[in-house]
Length: 52
Image (tube, rainbow, N blue to C red; front, side, top):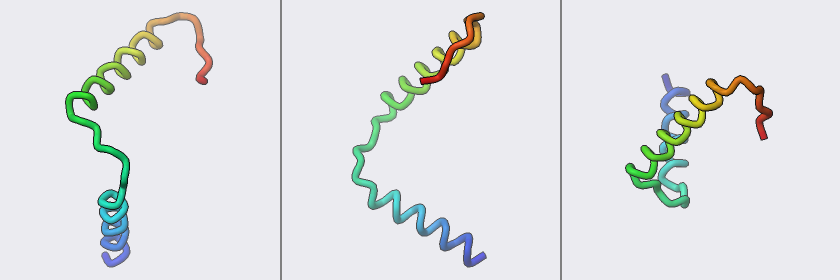
């Protein structure tokens, strides 16, 4: 139990100290929708693609 709590505390601390700007919710949703669309196109494309 103590190890798990220490792990959670460490993640929370790292999150609070993260200096990167937060992403607005609407932008995050747009990113997810875009990624889903890309994955769908890749799945439907018969030509194999190399990941870059």
